Image 1 (cartoon, rainbow, N blue to C red):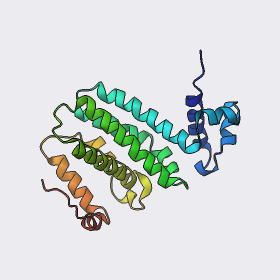
Image 2 (tube, rainbow, N blue to C red):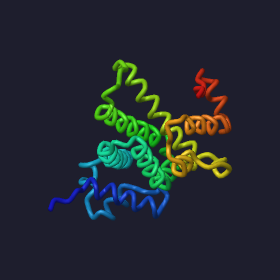
Image 3 (spheres, rainbow, N blue to C red):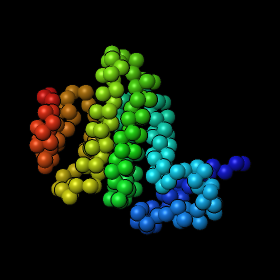
Image 4 (cartoon, rainbow, N blue to C red):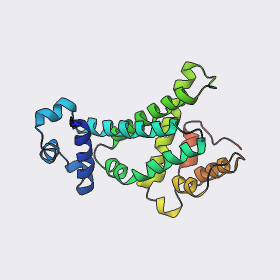
Length: 207
């Protein structure tokens, strides 16, 4: 059976990230652990960042497959939140590394692609123009990644209130506006949230 070299390299990177600082991982570490040559590594990936991006793409593709097989929006959301929570430790390591800016960009692109494919397959009622759809996808992708960064362990005030992920894991979404109101209040309580909204002219929508 042919060896999935790209998968092996990506899995090995994940293993090494649990053992050492992400910034300390090198191509030399990967090729030695995988038992491959540097030439083989560079045949499949340009650099370590591409390994990370490919790994995220694969993870979101797996998540997308599960999302498309479900007709329950709440189940899709819970699956997304659970997957994000499971990847939290690795994400924190990546985001505390010297590659944080690039990692954030990779996260936004991965989430955007996930949302785009989900919309194409399940968004039969989408009445937005192409331009508006593109804007909405980018806006939502940035918003989701922003929430993951804000409430996923980066902020020093995380321990003082439950995360958005914890809220939705404890209490399933309802269609009566209660969760929207809860999310709005949670946003308003976050330090700096009001100032950030005012700075770009945005506001928390009323319920």
